[in-house]
Image (cartoon, rainbow, N blue to C red):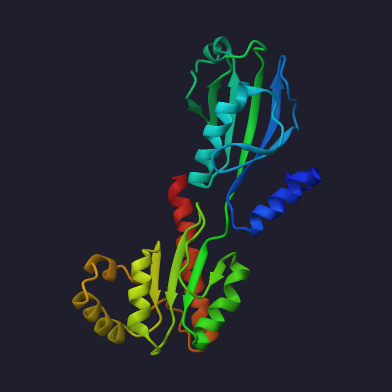
Length: 259
């Protein structure tokens, strides 16, 4: 739970319910005001994926458009946003215009008669990424046991993920329906797909997938064998190597987005 959630019971309860449903949402907190404004610093709201206020209050409609745009961007990028809504003449005095972004601050015009300035921090709250572990092998069971500790939502079969929720699949059938599992996984088009097995075994399966009409580039993108090379031997060690690779991918994506 974030500090924003514990300040108001209704926000905390609503946030917990949305987390339980693996839904994306955002918190907006007014951090600074200048002049006449409806809401004051500390005012908070919980907003849905379209920027609609579900709980809380941020004042009148003067900030609504800017907050909505910032929420959509924050949930799309997975990064917080800082927005300053101010009268056009004040923006001009700072040498910026509505739509500009300077040093992490996005500027928007306040066209309301109050003519106040409101700075708002947007905190995205995304559902944990979905990890589909296909198979009932010891490795599959070890992955399913360890993954929640690394903030993955785990499923045993491909399911429809929630909006803003990435999905990766690990096929750990290990001889029990490998080809059918790979066909199912490819049909879902996950963000990444890994196969637990040797290169030689996967090469034979890959040829069958090509013959079955699957796209060769999608087959080539499958990681086989799954996991980082840490010399893993036991199912738990193999599971650890796979989760290490998934964490590495996740952090690399965030680093790339920030670059």
